[in-house]
View 1: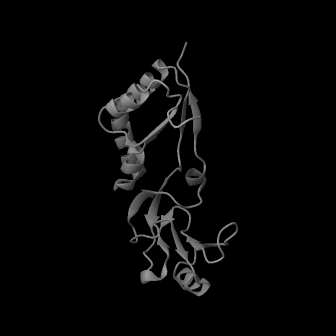
View 2: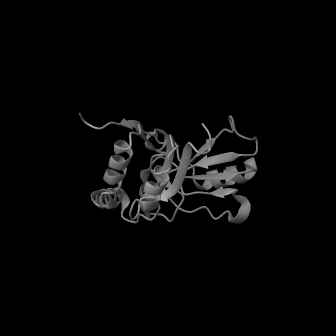
View 3: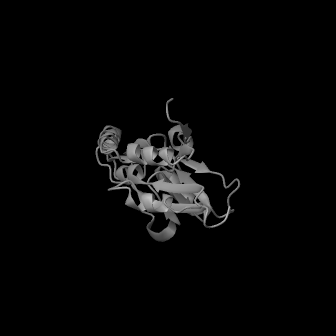
Length: 181
């Protein structure tokens, strides 16, 4: 494919489809990559757990953005595939490690350290966490994964997040969407 045959847009999911319509109007376009990150943005701002997230996603879906986008793509003859970069789960806070700047990555579901002693020290305070071996990763990329359905946030806090190893976070959909005959 040439650069004139492929178009890409990200940050979609709000408002109208003018930006997408303009991209599709280019005469030589054969492949379109669109990132609709609205659900991810809803998830990262969620304070009411999975039920609240499902409620907001349902409300967003009723606004018709995805319906109208799919209709536009199919009307113009595109084959449509839907995928995701990750799933998510509801997790409860089990406490926030206070390791200061020693963590290379301070996520809610995983922490990454470059020194095994530093990771071991945090593991002692969070004994149900999992020390992930650096298989396929750099030797100094030492992950500490929160316990199942837990997160490294304030004890008792509920969040919807990703980055762990639950099946819901690892399996992602890849769906072909076809128009009914």
